[in-house]
Image (cartoon, rainbow, N blue to C red; front, side, top):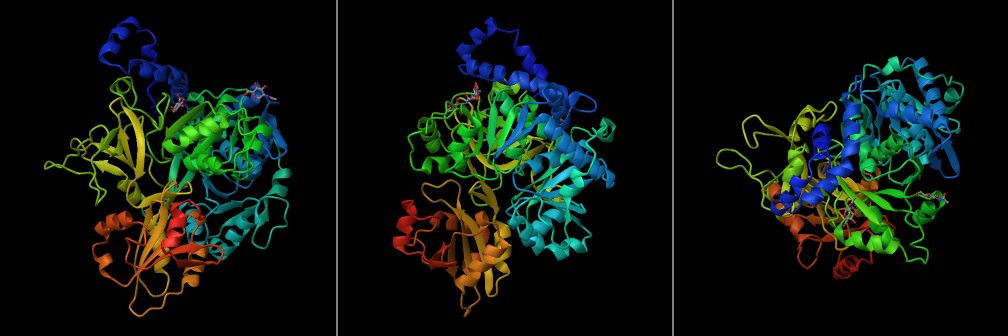
Length: 626
Ligand SMILES: *[C@@H]1O[C@H](CO)[C@@H](O)[C@H](O)[C@H]1NC(C)=O
Ligand SMILES: CC(=O)N[C@H]1CO[C@H](CO)[C@@H](O)[C@@H]1O
């Protein structure tokens, strides 16, 4: 496990040696731990150095350092375009000078709604050169959720990237944005519709003079570099304060995994998520090259890896699974990818992926964008996300704990003194990490209530404070950690977190809906959970399934739209809802178990159709597209 660690403790390990040999007899995991320490030591002390400088060394400083060192080195490959470090520097200077002229200053915020494209990166770099923060809006969001994300950022500026969908999504909320007095910039050479201004023209004409450092010299390590949105345990997405400290620690992930200057990392995940954004930080940190795709295409993926000569690929679990589901091709193993790094890889895909595509190493990490824990598997334990051993703890890794939880309430179990208890090896427990100066929890912007909800107090003694990850993990007797599941009101589907309460809110807008309970059900052969909505209608109400389908499609991003419906007239499934959820989840979508009528989404026919035993079988056998 590697966290924002205290590097000095690692340095101490170098000198000790023979005494430790004796220690392996009593502590058999010693060599493993030493291997981890070796691999993490250098990046860890680098991180510490950056953070302790005043003002701290930030990602922008690291970028400028690389520009000086290797201006002509390609930094970004996108489709058939190549941008060197110098190109990106010039473009970002133009962006910065333009916004500077418009009066933007250190501490201001600009929202951006942009797919992966070069402009994402130079706009980010340009604004960061001024110390202006960005709010990265999720390009899947529409209407109320999108507007909400813009509003919490407390900005008056929105930059919209290329792509019809983004334009449409913005047009849908244009009136509300204008009411807030927002200026809306459009990227690309399209003539902007009424209400939008063209940014490219302005930026092209701007000066490319370097930006004086003093414009951002007041930045501290805990200031946000950007806001990244997460759908947490309740309702609408929350804006995570993604600090410079966190950006630098995330950047060290690929560094720990050995990313070299001469290597190319191929990123297909959206840059507005912390995962891909942090990876880009790693590329900058090492002065390597980033190959970027607008979006993920399973059939195109390996051709692109070959085209770019990529040697490192970030993933989320589902991504590697989709690659494995592609028809086999004779050139599957012809690629230069030596390492995949990411999170959420399930053990059943791990081996298959490595064998089929000949990828020698997988580095599994764990870390939520808002969390204060970050693990990285630097051992060799299939399926493990990292190690939290007593030795590593002593050497400066922040401690983490797995707590017993009540399966009905999803809350930690407290003993008669109100204290929590750790689980035994092999048992799933709630991951918590103490909140400290070196592992702060920055919380969510303008949402004290949600921030407080993620803090667990009086866990082992009065007044202590822990970050509540909301994730169930287990550890084996050798202190390897394994991800088990997300707890409570969110579940993962297609690599995104679905907030059940947000889906429920949208369903409640439909006429005739009396009660709703949204949860995720396990589907064999699929990662995460498929969304299911149990709905109770007012007595006598006729359900209009196509209308329900249309409503969900217009209000929710694709991954959040329920796959299954369970319609009931029996109001008492709601009276004890909280506890009932556990049973509902258990019953799943099996029509032989569930007595209420069940329906499944039919995207082609734009409605829900009856889920009978035949349809159920097709899904379980992996023959139906969900
Ligand atoms: C591909 O990248 C590797 C480094 O990962 C490098 O050694 C090799 O020369 C590159 N091949 C080509 C054709 O550029
Ligand atoms: C960096 C590292 O050692 N990663 C390992 C994580 O676990 C897998 C599964 O055994 C190994 O293949 C990786 O090498």
